[in-house]
Length: 158
Image 1 (tube, one colour):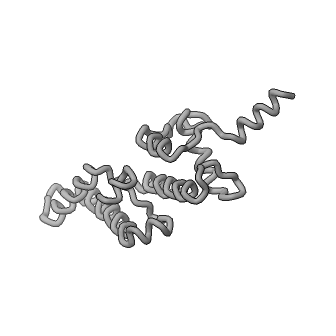
Image 2 (image 1 turned 90 degrees about the horizontal axis):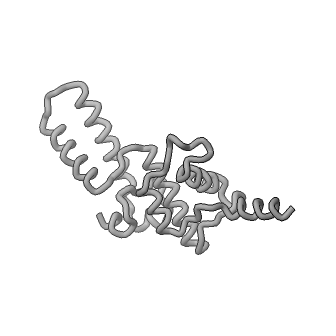
C-alpha cells in the first residue's frame, strides 16, 4: 500500500525501472504471484462449485487486491510498465517529449496513448480509461505531438 500512496495506483510494473526495484525489491515478484493465484482461482471456480479453504483464502486475498485497484489483467499490467518507463524518462529529462531515436518502443507507446485518448488511428475500441488519462496528466503528458504541430505549421506556411 505504500507504493499505492506514493504513485497513485497499485500496479507495480513487472519490468520495473532500477529506481523502483531498489525501493521495492520484492514487489514485482509479489504482483506476478498474485496474478498467477488469480488465474488459478478463476480456472478452479469454473471446474467445481466446491469452495475449499485454500480456494476461499485465495478468493479473499484477490478481493482485497481488487479493492485497492490491483490489476490482474496482464495487458493492463504492461501498460503500467510503459507508464513507469515514461515516468523515469521524465525524472531524468524534466519532460515527456521524447524523440523516436531516443527510445523507439516508448515513443510508439506515447503516440499510441494519444490516439487511444481520442479514438483516432483506429483505436476507437481501445479508448484510454479516465484513470490512465489522470495518471498521464499528473506527469505532464502532452496530448498533442510537438512533431505534428511543427509539421502542420510548416505545411500551413507553405
